[in-house]
Amino acid sequence: MELNPRQVRLSAYKLIACQVAVAAVVALVFYLINGEPAARSAFKGGLIAAVPNLVFALFAFWFLGRGSAEQARTAMMRGHSLKIVLTIVLFVVVMQQPIAAGPLMAGFILTLFAQWSTAIFFKH
Image (cartoon, rainbow, N blue to C red; front, side, top):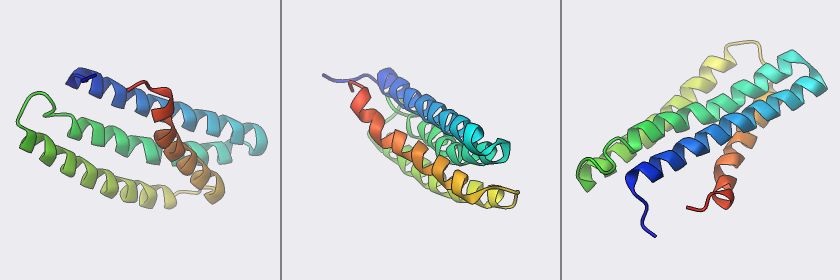
């Protein structure tokens, strides 16, 4: 079954929404166990994983179905590069703040895991 560009974009945005939901759940668990500072750190870690994916999706799918295959490939490469740079920048910015390192990394890793595991739940 061939997916149209709109379906592909919609799937990417669903994935990002799932990542934000996972980040919120992880933050809630840390809030219940360790309190507000840990929850904030966990949520920031989740956002460090989700926000670059949103930026990637916006860049990568900009030309999908609109331009040539070469434009789409270039947009995906730029989006991926920007995603990596943005992840590093967000980590640097967050590490300048008072944070709890364990919850931050837990939020980041669990949100990334959500990215890898959602393929099981989506039909395409």
